[in-house]
Amino acid sequence: MAESILDKTIDWNFITAENFLEEESKIIEGIYSQQLKNREKSEKQGIKDWGDKKYIDQGIESWQFKSIIRDQKSLELLIEKI
Image (cartoon, rainbow, N blue to C red; front, side, top):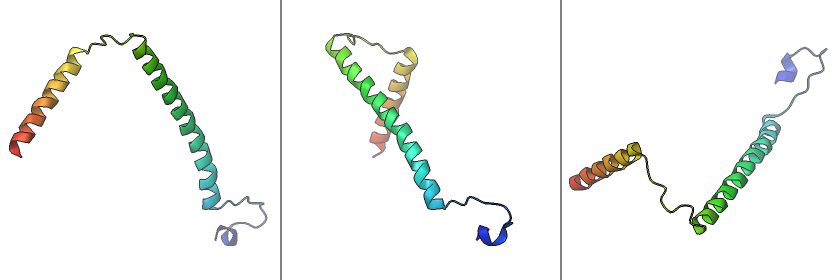
């Protein structure tokens, strides 16, 4: 459609939506692939650290504890209603 309405004296480089999406998907796949590899490496390190007893007591911050308690109370209230 664009070819029929645009100036023919200009050398346009048209690309189909399908080709564009194919190129973009390769880029996105490469990005997520690296993120997945990084996550896997981190998880393996975490397992190793656990085995090396580096995670004996991680503790939680007070705001996290309050959040857990609040969520537990909300869950209990929901269960009571059911």
